[in-house]
Image (cartoon, rainbow over the protein chains, first blue to last red):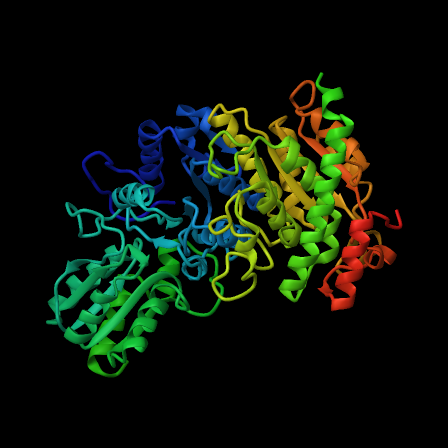
Length: 323
Length: 285
């Protein structure tokens, strides 16, 4: 299932993003007795097993009953505990959407919703398990922060940042094991990180697409195009200053997300540009308004044109004026 | 057993008088609101009165007191009697509700835990309360507290699947300090629950999910006192469901008639009749 080049980061060598946060949950559980973990019969699939083994009295498998699970999480949160709710992204954000919205968003209760199989990362799992709407749905909820870290290291960092954040947080977990290009810098919720400098065009990417965006930028540099890459690990609240700077300083903005092009990162950037009247050309890469076919994740990314080749192609077209 | 003290005639008289007071305040607040859910607000008054004026371990001076028992009004549309109960219990003055429904008011059709002192959870959407109550009961276990958790639900709300997810969990986790109460007033917005989507046999359903179940007259103060005095269950391993048979619009003759009075507005004349009915205590039942 995991793909991409293997990658060493200090203590998270060769780890998938799942394992990255699994370890982080144990760290948080050790430091904070109020941390509880809830899953809907997915502790093994989501690598929450370490927490379950370490803190059985604070770990709850609530069965395949997602609405009850999120309601329970709200009960925990209202009692002063900090629930981490771990599920597959589609079920997390759709089956229990109203509980997240009304029981967490509205009363601004603190809870962290961690979702695996974001976007098409599940590959051949098929459309019922492809989460191409999760960021759009979570963005809709007032008080909710939406994070899309690139790899294990940043998933761990995002989990810590979510714990420190006062309201509810959604973290979509991708399969990426590649460097983001932001190694060594702090993970600051609400900001974008520049992972490649340039002034001809800007690519704004989230999740494991950041690595492909960086690859595309390096290839385009060989063609003489200087492309800025912004790693947008926080889709909400969006770093609008970074978007507007890109609009001023570069001719084209290309957004890349493993998500429908409606309402997620591309949607957020489009709203920002429209709200301010910025006239920069915008290309949104991702899943068009359709259900994805079966395939391995990298094949699907190529199919929809948001692997490294597809991103480079889109930037070339847009900057040449033929896009 | 504290049963004799629980049921002293004086206590019963005091609570019955409180119930009349709350029903009067419900009518007044409902009139001030323009229109509201009178029927379901009035049907649950006696349950609320017994809980808030005798059973719950609460301190209105410290609404966030950690050791307090928790109460979740899953039928959040019952705010028209619930908010007067909180005010009368001392969480805030009655006058705080004067601006109900107006821009920026803490009070509207449903309840907000961030704005109304004493509200343990914001509710309004049906089917949300019991899962939250289950989470609170599990939290008590994690935090090693001896708090009790009460959740008052509507009867037609029993159609919601999330309630049965929570009922499964409460039975499975043996949440003996959880008590769910169903305000069985028989009618939803559009008619008889058994004609729309039958919920009975409710007793057997909760029992099958691992609950201890009691069915009682939800307007009988002594019966309610007895039921709550028996909590948690003797072995402490089963959650308790109390199915409280009630009358929609209880206390107001023209609302009780036909028991279909769900939502609406009262004319000045209707308001006077309703208040007279409540004060006389004479109703059809």
